[in-house]
Image (spheres, rainbow, N blue to C red):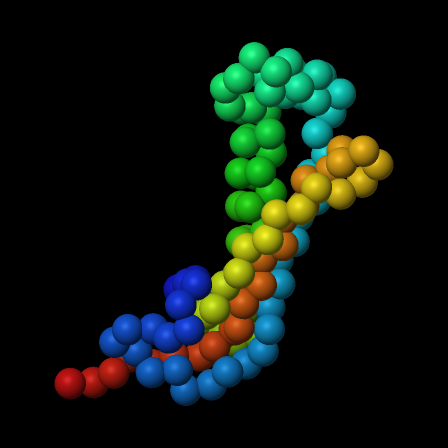
Length: 110
């Protein structure tokens, strides 16, 4: 399945706009990751624990987006937007929300 941030598909004709699809994931960061991340923030450098959680959340979000689009009969998702938020008490949760428009396309014949 093609998933893109663009509104069109080069070399393809969108023949049907099916609807909006969304994939979301909320990941909790445990206490030890929080402690090590805050230490890393003080001394500088990247927080690998949070980067790993964001990567997992993003992959889950894209998987859900694609599954929802397939269930609607789409073969692509265009206009994809990715949002990251910190939610929960004291910002203890990381949320990724991915949305786009499920479409059905055909290849353009020469």
